[in-house]
Amino acid sequence: MSSKKVEAFLDTLPLLQDSKSRGVFYAKLRPKESDPEGYSKKVQTWSDFIYRICNYVNRVSFSANELSSLLEYKGLRPECIEQILDELEYNREVKSVEDFTKEQGWGGWLFDNVVKKPILSFASPLRGKTPQRKLVHLKLVEERAEKLLEKYGDKKLVLIEELTNSSGLSKEDLELCFSFLRKSKKAHTTILENGQKAFKFTRNGEVINDIDTGIMHLELTLHKLEEQKLKLEAEISKTRLQALEYKKKSNKSAALLHMKRMKNLEGVLNKRLGSQHTIQDILDKIEDAHSNAEIIRAYELGAQTIKTTTEKLGLSKERVDGVMTDLEEVFADQREIDDAMKIGTDLINQLDDPDLEDELANLEKEISKPQQDSPATKLANELDKIKLISAPNQSPVAKTPEKITPLTPNEEDEVIRKLEAEFA
Image (cartoon, rainbow, N blue to C red; front, side, top):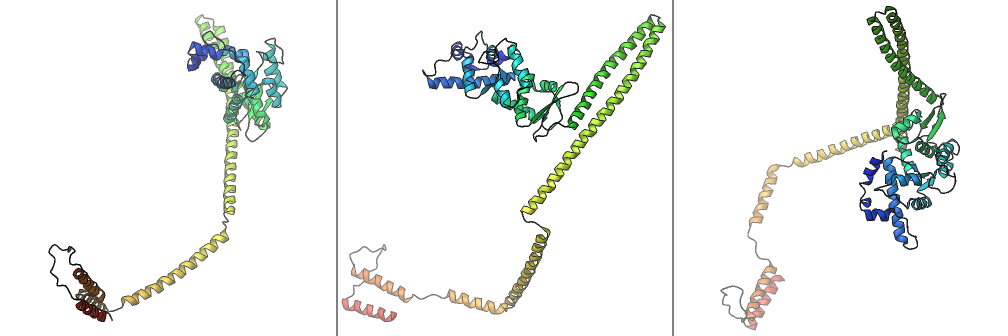
């Protein structure tokens, strides 16, 4: 990635736009004991910053020197980068390539090609913390490895050149991602007959087999035939032009010689095209066979799932037949009950409607008769009169009270005896 694109990315970070804050951010770390909280915050800010910039430039490994050069901005380089990387290594956010590859169980080819060669090119010691020592960002290598697995998982072999072009990662970073997946048996590698390195990514732990190498050989052959075809077409076109030039110059023999050569080249081209068509047809049939196999596996899985589900739910032909038989019996019983209820309803409906109408008329007459006061009501009325007589000074409720003649004690006693007689 060009330095201009990196600088454009750094332009978007508010932290670096002010020269004073940029100077403080890029300055060496103060002793942790002087301000533990501020020290931790700055380390965390740098941790996020390094992740963002490496993610942007698509890098999973780097040295202190490379990172310092990458982060140069407005003529200023970070002076704290080695301190920060030491802290990140202590916090297990980064790890040396040497330790990482050994931990993943790959100490041979990968260590020689990814660790030794880049470091020796700086004429630096292999061991020890130096600015040239390669480090791996553990979160980024895991994320990039998962992307490769998602794209190429359970597919054919892939050449490292194809991975480099499609992922944008360097060969060294690809090897680190591959090493991460290899530990969990999600990636395998092999060396082809032509010396090229090929990778296989898988989620189910499937190793490289003869089918994989056979398909890769066919694809490489097809690629060679395509290159030969393009070369032959160019040569045929060139030979045709030369024949025409010789004819214009009246050099008939030379013109005929080039025409003969052109015909020979066309014959070779036709053979190459035939071979190309045959190999492509073979690859198509292999792909079709894989697709059919996947469909059959899906059918098998579906059938097994249905079988397991029915067994788990206790569904069987015998159980269904039994339930349906019970259901028919219940419906038959219910029909008999409904028929019996219908007979009773019909008997009730057979009552003479005229008799019911006469009874209803008598009931209406009784309700319409004026009702006499009950003994209790009479007693309450008489008591109200006594209260009014015994309290002549109280204001009557009505607006124009009646004039009531007071009773003597003997008359009151007589009224009460009469009332008691009525209630006896």
